[in-house]
Length: 149
Image (cartoon, one colour):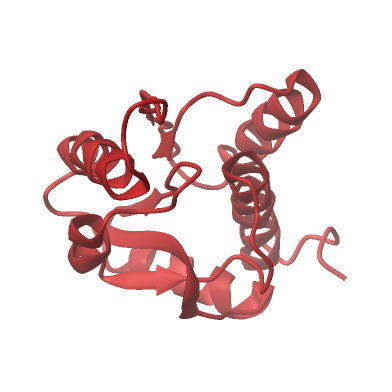
């Protein structure tokens, strides 16, 4: 799940490419929620409104992974093992990427895991691209394919 659609066409194309690749390895459903206008609202209000939209889309039984600075760090092999472990247990995993102001406190509280995608602050479009690529990479690691070196 992500807030907003990618505005940059090149990034959107790269996201679509990696989501297509990742879907060969994992059941993948992408949900985008409306980005809240920040013109007349504070960052907290924007986060809360976007958080409500995201929360409404999260499956009740899913393991919720909120992409958030300061979350758990995993290298690619650990991320692949994390996904495979949940797959083997028959659990769905819902990844949640916030908008320009991040995720609401309520959404973060709902997280089973908070995951740091990078030690840097990423625009949410790039965060989505990084996540899509790592989902693909995790699939190749699980099948011992040569993509991950």
